[in-house]
Image (cartoon, rainbow, N blue to C red; front, side, top):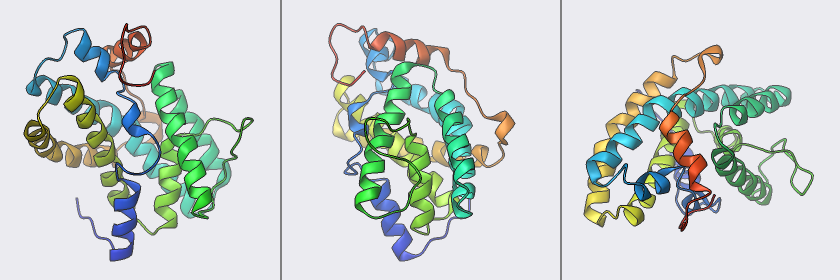
Length: 228
């Protein structure tokens, strides 16, 4: 993976992938809270396996290939293609909660990009259609001169950091354990990006039954720290 970027685009990437970006990613566990509550995950090594599986068989198979295609459409300002790919990524969300995670963050990023005067084709307000966070991430990346591989790296890191932060609260993991986990999973991000670069549109899709079950059952969990 050969990643190059300018200083300005690197700073924009850090902004776009920062945990302080006001899109609410920290408020969703994406099934992790249920998996921990029911005892599927009890220690650091099991969390590693759970996140590695999602990176390689969900993020790399759906989010990153579509991020690449969305950036290609955004570069030529093909609004119809952006809207079509936005519908495709939402159709790939296996549960209502996973779709909510994507659209709630997407709606927040619409508001933010409008405030930053970044042009984007999605409406905002009560009658607005659902928009994926991935779609807005792609548009922002193109607008700020971030290349595709770098954007995929930033997107993957933001996803992973939010998930490890959730595990830190839920397992619970200590701060040192969390940093070790982030370090161990960094090579998996590179592997996920490499896999995503070879996936064509007709190959996009993921099937992680335990993740879907955990996400669906999370909304009926007796006590929750994260949104459902």
